[in-house]
Image 1 (cartoon, one colour):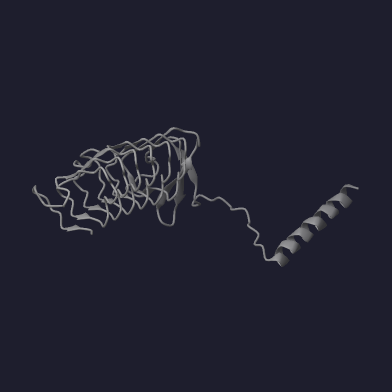
Image 2: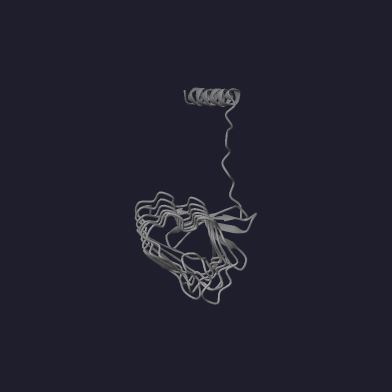
Amino acid sequence: MKHTAQKRAAKAASFLLSAFALSGIALLKPATLTASANLDFTQNGVNWYKDDATKTITAISLANPNATSAVFETRSTFPPSTWTYVIGEDMLRGNTKLKSIKIKSGIKRIDASAFRNDSALTTINLTEATDLTTIGNSAFENCDALTTIQVSANTGVQTINYSAFYDCDGLKTVNLSELSKLKTIGTIAFYSCNSLTSITVPTGLTTIGTQAFQSCWNLNYVYPYTWNNEKIFDCKLQSVGA
């Protein structure tokens, strides 16, 4: 009886495999983990994916989906001198729990829409983000509760990309003056930040993209520039979008 049952099970399995094959549905074989395989790991509550081929380590999710804060930092066994750490595209898009994030040294980029539509996010701390060069397209778009962007002289940001802080209605004042490496504020980067009254940018800034501050109805000053972009201090502004 035992052998008969096994044969029946084998026939059933064979039939299912044939059916899938005829239907054109691909069957996925279980991956065999080796020493060189891509491995996930968790660091300080953040889940990371390691891609050996590109030497990139990407933050993909939080270990606790209900976490209200997150700290992004590198792992000593995979040093940033060898690996590129990035916060992945769409990583926490639409999160409703997260209130604050802190990014530490070694993190290179925040990719597109990583925190887009995060309705509870109030604070971004970049004071220790010495290696962060890029805030990606729409990275914090429509984070309505966002009130605070913390930076320091150590913050490495060079580019704030397209739509990065689009429609962040909670922002009232933004001080980026300590970002000595910041060169570009991209197109519609702060578009429709309706509560924004002033923004201070570093004198080394070279480009403000098209409509970067469009529809910021309460914005009176872009320091060290007047609202009509007249140069009034020693700065290096080269182009301002229409």
